[in-house]
Length: 90
Image (cartoon, rainbow, N blue to C red; front, side, top):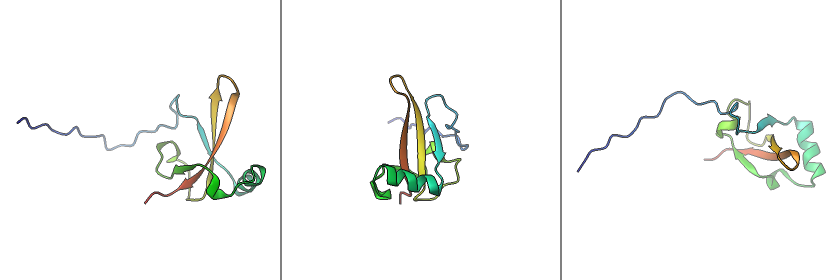
């Protein structure tokens, strides 16, 4: 049997926030958060979720319950906006 060595991973973290395929992620203020929930008539638990450990938001100062605004370029719509609530996965 051949012993295969596991490939070691680099210990430094890769900053994906500036990658061309990663859309812009921004933290919403409490005022914006309330306006979003009211505009879409939803509660915080109804928003799609994003892990606090997601590589795209690691450089933002976030806490579970914060809302993230994701702006993506779209060939048909120009720009599209998505919202996610930050959660901590245990």
